[in-house]
Image 1 (tube, rainbow, N blue to C red):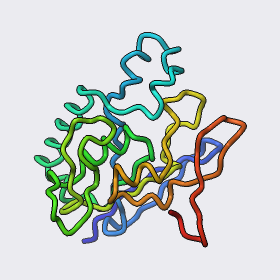
Image 2 (cartoon, rainbow, N blue to C red):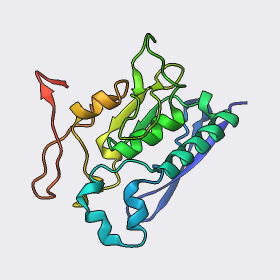
Image 3 (cartoon, rainbow, N blue to C red):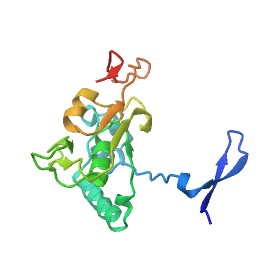
Image 4 (cartoon, rainbow, N blue to C red):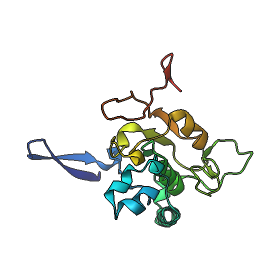
Amino acid sequence: MTQTRTLTFYGMEGNSGTAVYPMHRCKTIHLVRHAQGIHNVEGETDHSAYMKPEFFDARITPLGWKQVDCLREHVKKCGLAKRIELVLCSPLLRTMQTAVGVFGGENYTNGENAPPLMVENAGHSKRRAISSLNCPPFLAVETCRERLGVHPCDKRRSVTEYRTLFPAIDFSLASFFHCKFMNCVVDLFISNGVPN
C-alpha cells in the first residue's frame, strides 16, 4: 500500500481545500529561527535599540552559539541530520551562522578537498571553521529574509564579503536591486549573466 499525506491548504478568501499526495513525492520542511542575536538582547527591553548602527547585520551571541550547539546535538541524536537534503537560509550573518552551526559538517581542517562552510571566527564568532563535507548543500535566498526594513540589524553585507566568510554557501539567489525607498544596502552582482 502506498503511503499518502493529506495536505490542507487555505486560499486567499479563507476557503480550504484538501489534496492527497503519495509520500514519496512529498518533502518535509523544517523551519528554524536564528539563534539569539546581539540585537535581540537589547531589543527585548528597548525596541528603539534596533536602530543602533552597531547592530548592522547582527551576529549571534555566546548564548546563541549554545542554542546552536544544543539544536545540532538534538538534530543528530534524533536522526534528522541524515535526512536533510538542502538547507535554505537568508543571507544575514546570524541566519547563516545558525544554519551552518546546526546543519554543517564537523570542524574544518586545512587540506580538505572542499571549502569550509564557515571560516574560523566568522563574524567575530570565536568558533572554529566548519566543514562542508558530509552535510547537505546550503543556499542563501534573499526572499527567506524576515523583513527588509530600516533597522540596521535587518540589513546585510555584500555577497562578496559573505563569500569570504562562508565559502561553500551558494549565494546565487542572494542578489537583488538597491531599494532607495526602504534605504536598504543591497546589491546585484550580475556580470555577463553570472552572479558573482
